[in-house]
Length: 317
Ligand SMILES: O=C(O)[C@H](O)[C@@H](O)[C@H](O)[C@H](O)COP(=O)(O)O
Image 1 (cartoon, protein in one colour):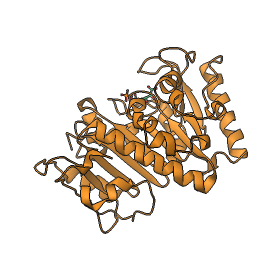
Image 2 (cartoon, protein in one colour; image 1 turned 180 degrees about the vertical axis):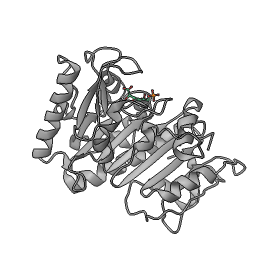
Image 3 (cartoon, rainbow, N blue to C red; image 1 turned 90 degrees about the vertical axis):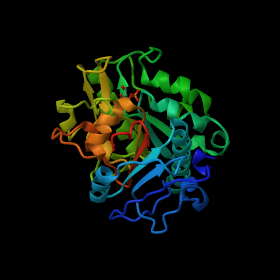
């Protein structure tokens, strides 16, 4: 299904200290015929290329991948290839958690991510995914009415949620009648109820809620969710959900999950496309001299953290 079925492909895997044991690794990537199968099953960096002549510098990512457990970096020739892989991985996790827990808790961000989810609303996934088990949340939301052009709910509804049979009661939008403070508090209370009713798991390692999958984007400044470089909210370590009134990216008022919640997710997928984001990608995965830690460099996950990059975003690696 993915364009990785084109004839000759380069494939490189860097050995890291953790063996793959989970199905987040897409079945399509495992097919030895298309992309070269890593017989050792180690996590690492994969380049999904159409030409054997494509040359990438590996040194920087090698260093990063070798020191971090549970982290994988997937680089795709095109955003189309990336979207196909992202759909397959999401569907695999939906199946896994649907079977294991009877529900699948998925967290969305705003921005270009929603477009990259487009293949989930097409065959085979539109018919094969058990949408009734999905519970949908937002890692961050702008404090605007739900029908406002800036609303992440509206973006997701128009581009994704309205096209799949997820139960309306399983879609957890913010209360847009409240202030930023009120909406953050209300959202955290909602999450606590869902933990009590076992729809949302708890991390035994951290005590924070453990979402099954977070689908994250990254801004050109290296922000994730509404956690911006140098902002004190990056250090919040008690609250589950907090608010910001001075977001450097408009609109200024938002609510956001905190890092302890983001990093307690079972699986985090960070979807990054375009040359405009090559700088922070390099800072996080390559050889960068910058000593300031960007928010994107603070992301991890309990089971697996995968970067989905197109080749423009990976161009400085
Ligand atoms: O509400 C928001 O602004 C987002 O949730 C934000 O964190 C977004 O994911 C990144 O800014 C990437 O956005 P792009 O992919 O559109 O660059």
